[in-house]
Length: 159
Length: 159
Length: 159
Image (cartoon, rainbow over all chains, first blue to last red; front, side, top):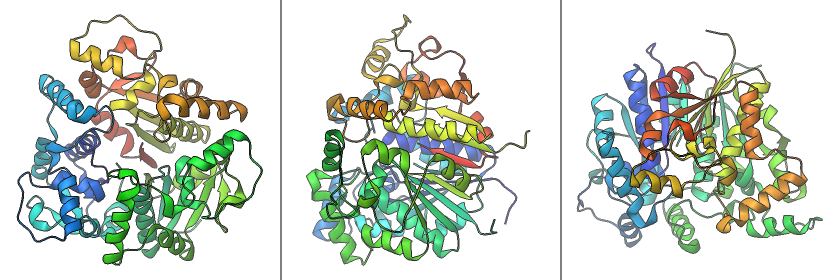
């Protein structure tokens, strides 16, 4: 047990803007010396997907899910004003203008700051996602690990 | 006052996947001996609706709301990839294959684990839902009770 | 440092019903003597917009965002059953019948109860919103202020 403050975020959402908010809060908390965990479940797992297709054996249903879900942080849509993908382009343009970090860089920064990125194994099973398809150097766990991490936490969020 | 850890979840969402996440976290926390409360408000109340129609007197507007909202946990849609109801069927198929509990069973398990299920009386009024239409053995309360339950809590989430 | 309990809410959502839930919890917590902060980010900033158009200099992209986003709490849509704006009208009718406060009044009450309303400066930049367009007597801050406010808090929510 450390004396550090703790921030634990469940990232459930697969929206670009919500994932951005999650990673900005996480990186901010880490900068203020919190011990930070992001527990990725359901659509939030997409933020951890590798961009390129990884050859793994899947059932038909798993292949369908795999095709329909965005491959990696950069491909995610917006929760509002998505306009068939035009919204994310606009936001990314504005972000570039304001020197705001795009989501894939926020994920990279989180890894550099030793933020614990966890993929929920139960929902990986449900969505047919395999370890080979997700980023390297992340952890795999279930709800018990989440409870253990967050019960002594200071900031607990579901995003 | 007990020395137990506390998890308090506001379930606002009426999406099957989000309600599932709420109930999985709640059941997990209860298994780790937390005192757990789920405060159902707005569309989250639908998770507590009985499946069969209950004859109660309603105004026209209340009848409309009643018709448009899903009757019970099993009828709820997905927050993503709902595809006119095909998404929930796919998810339920995969869940069966992986022996994951469907939402109605998660609600049942929560009741068996003495998780406090609260229906928000203010939003029941707004949506025209009456006690007869909701599951038995739940509690009824307002925002004051929520603040009381969560202010000494360890994990507080809004889902 | 005070001994008061603390509630800190991130309002990310631009939906009328979610913003209502945020402000009801915030006002409830303030009534129970919590120190309350609502940190408005992304679409949640729209709850703080003035209703009338304010003449400010904007780039084309910023003008587009400004036009597409609701101007003020009263113009926001519902997260469910929005039906091209009919949903909010129905909800507001029912709220009136039940003497529930509409969102703009909830915001006003929050200001009267000294709830700290913060606008996230980073997302104001992204969405091209300027101080002149937002309500008076609010504060402006970034993620660092949010971490500072919430790390010693009792209730922390992301809505």
